[in-house]
Length: 209
Image 1 (cartoon, helix red, strand yellow):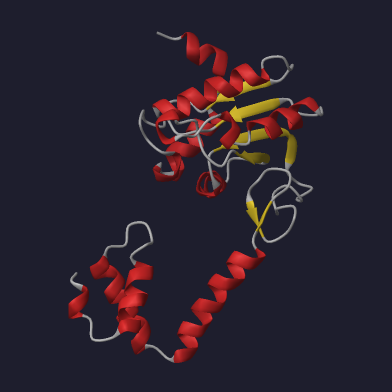
Image 2 (cartoon, helix red, strand yellow):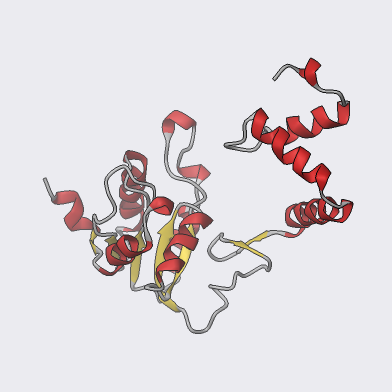
């Protein structure tokens, strides 16, 4: 949209900021800004306050790297979770997807990304080292590789498998109820739950034709 169409510099600035968000074009950004202008000032203040508080006070769990309000997240601090079972995921959206199945009672490890040389994401850019440390510290009997069924996800799975091969830990992966090419967060709860329950040894999956 041509900036000359704006009647207010402040309006244009707000639209520009909203348009920086993923999936938000300038037309949608303008609708959002105009919606805020129609609301009470208190609504905008509440939104702005929530965003500022989020950026200033959010933590990453020092154990699993999940987003948390505290130094240790609610999952890791829950005495009812099985700490001998670690489910490896890419991001918090995948944690939320797996939690929604109500089929998993272990803990998580959030990588913060997957290997993608084309995007400049290598082993040093994801939290594989701290995963290896968790396994090496003992008490872990199974690591579940729950990354998206994409080329990057499979490559990351194999890298982790090799990284943990020196430890006597069972390494499994989700059953292929999750379609090839699908990202975990977009898989429906029933399919994802079944894939979790019917997981297979990773070593068997890499030897299949």
